[in-house]
Length: 238
Image 1 (cartoon, one colour):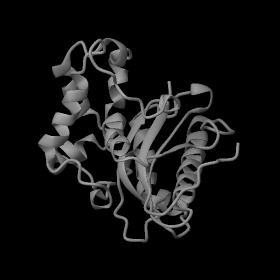
Image 2: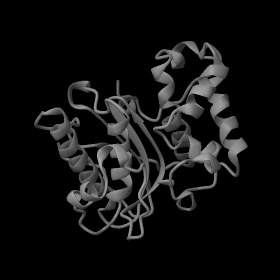
Image 3: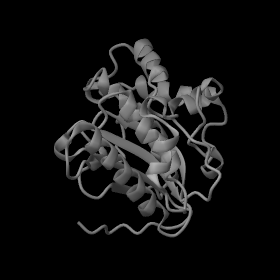
């Protein structure tokens, strides 16, 4: 399928995709760590060699994030990995940057996944999906939208019925390792280097408390009284 959206330098985009046939693409921590590492390792205009990465680290020792001293293809503002899909908030840094970055990441991860699980063929559902965040409110909401995704793992119907236990849900989000949530609410406690370049994005959250209040506001919304905006109905992988 040919993409109609044209990526422009210095513009912001919500990038997402899911496993083919809605299959799980992250089975355990090793899979999650490999994908996050690739988000760092592949973000360079230079051609990458996965063999170099494999020579340096065993899968069990793979760091979440490698220091990137090269010239990035994109800026990353937020990310979240779910069992069968992923979400990224990206800023186009150079011409063709997002497309090149996503091709590197998904190709490298598919090769790794297929080898590990003895399968072949495509792992993700066609060309990655992209939404242009051309509105300030739209862009700000996407930070919350991406970081709230893990709530579906403990209460799938929360958007329709409201959160049943706000305290435990908030605690769950703060303990979810495979998103950039901690980079915004308690970055000093990160055990690995960040993927993010916050300076490349609007400063909606001037400190940790502002971000956490924003998340809590969404967790407290009542479906009967408020309308939860959708980034796009198609951006809801199941």
